[in-house]
Amino acid sequence: MTTARNATYVVSASQRLNAQPRRVYDTIANYHTGHPRIVPKQFRNLIVEKGGIGAGTVIRFEVTVLGRTTAFRAEVTEPEPGRVLVEKNILGSDSVTTFIVEPGTRADESVVTIQTEMTKRPGLGGAIEKFLTGRVLRPMYAEELRLLEAAAADPHGTAASATARA
Image 1 (cartoon, rainbow, N blue to C red):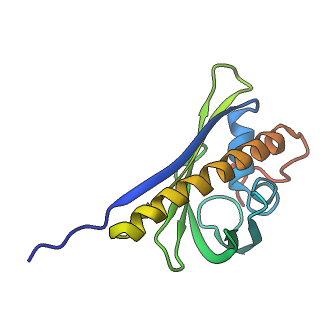
Image 2 (cartoon, rainbow, N blue to C red):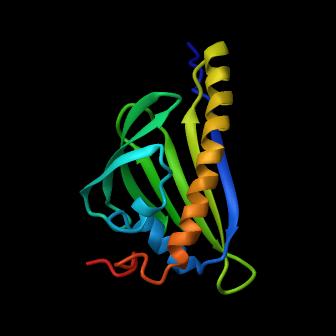
């Protein structure tokens, strides 16, 4: 008997930011003071359950899209500390959101990508969901990248560095 693997799809957005890569990454990885400043208005009730800086952090939050609120609980890993941070949903869906921070052409510039991988449901419903998800997430990620640039450029933005783990 052959079983079909669930197909996945990725929604992503990238942008060049006027902020140093280390400050950008530290802002993303700090779920106490940095990350709450970069989430768009559709995200609510970000609560740190465990940790709070980088790998080992467990968070929960809600996202309201098209009038529907969905709860998420995610575990954070850092496959490449200082460059790649991953939030894996451990409540309900198997979505994985990855933040990739790369140096720009100048020392005070970063190229940041936010991407979410999700399992595609079969059939027409899955195709519609994939289409709508892309139409909704891309503008949200564009807003998140704009907020990230502002937060990372603010010298008083993050109280603790992601690299200064206790």
